Image (cartoon, rainbow, N blue to C red; front, top):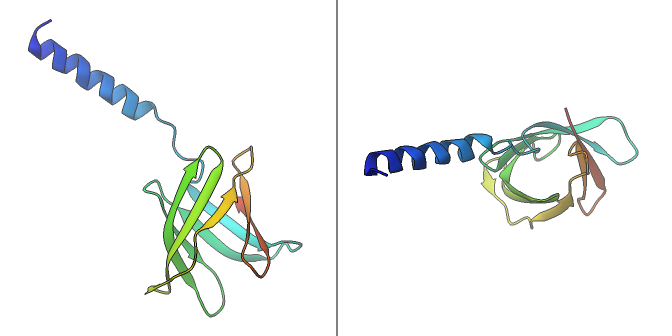
Amino acid sequence: MSSRKYWLVLASAWLLVGCSSAPSPMLGTWTATVEGSTIPVGVFEFQQNGTFVGKIPGPISTIKGSYTLEDRNLTLDPETNDGKPTNDPNIACKLAEDHKSFSMNTGYSFVHFVKD
């Protein structure tokens, strides 16, 4: 096989693999409610690049950070609260089997997230 054909085959294979990967089930908007309530307490937007932005009412109105998802194990790493660095610990959650919800223990209450 000529060098040119080799590189063409290699580039085509690379494109097929890159284009066939499924998007993360986290992508999009998620609405948060406190356990036992139907009133939304926040909206979080998860991006393909592994970051999230959460808008919540109260003294801290914007949370930004990163996330990782391995199988259904979700880890949230809050990095800033209203633009100020935070030392908040990572939060481990389990994504539901249908990939449409997860819950977290905030230390004060359980918060349930549902994908919009």
